[in-house]
Image 1 (cartoon, rainbow, N blue to C red):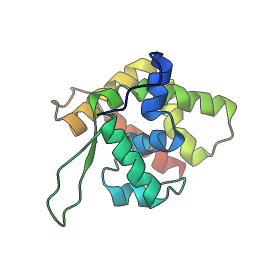
Image 2: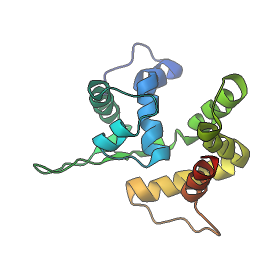
Image 3: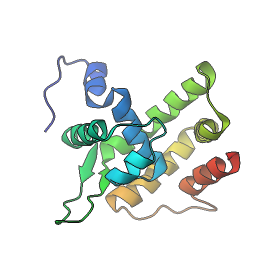
Image 4: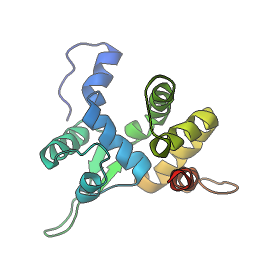
Length: 161
């Protein structure tokens, strides 16, 4: 279970749970990159996370209730899944991405998903959260017309290459 927060401030409690950059990037890669295994997260890291840092952040995120780790048998890879708490961070990630688009230098290839989320607003974020609940929590798939948010995000990224 998570360590008690240094104070009762909600912002402090949130920062203590996921506020360091590596934790946010690991959650981003599970959420938007569909990476669920240690090796996928390590190999797919745009920022070049070290294996010891990744192992530490995965453990912290599990302890904080933001990821679950599947019990894998000997010789099997353990999958990580988002929890409801981390799925509810989609609007936070969308807002962080939008802020980064407006105030930091970015590359076309890596900005397209943030642009799509910003343009789609809360309706798209809710649709994406419903899809994540299906993938990570086993919820029934949401009804939709046309491609899923995951498919639209993947296409935007591929088209930018």
